[in-house]
Length: 209
Image (cartoon, rainbow, N blue to C red; front, side, top):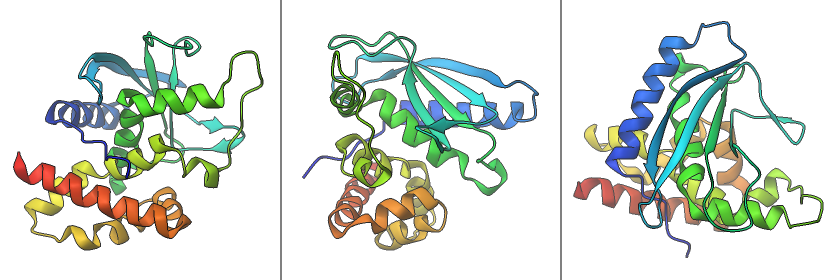
């Protein structure tokens, strides 16, 4: 089984700072609004990765409207260090008042600090060849997506633990908060079982802190 992405307190703390900053600046009439940057530790070896967050008026990926996306300042090198990871959040699809900002933000932060994401992107962009376009269903089989779809609920799981809510039903409840997570959850029995396993392991880690 692929291991879950465990987000540290430092990462969660930065995510909360960015969430607050986004809420405070949500109404600013800027198409591409830079919220801030931070060095966040890699999930592999804790090496700092430069991550920059933007709010944008609208956002598409391969012709599909999306809530968030993680990219790079320059084309992804074939190996070695990435200069800068850039996260964009789509104001047109997010509603902070409905508490849907943090899960999307954590999903994208997980990509930015996850070496699995680097590997998946490199496989989709072979040198000297056209990029490989994947459907949503195909993306659900990528290790980086499987890790991010569980890690995106880390902050929510913290709140569930404080409220003594059972993590056994968390995945089902989160389907009502995110249509994207619901699609992933219902994609196949294997992805659903993996999400359940990852949620259990994330909860166990949170309880040890």
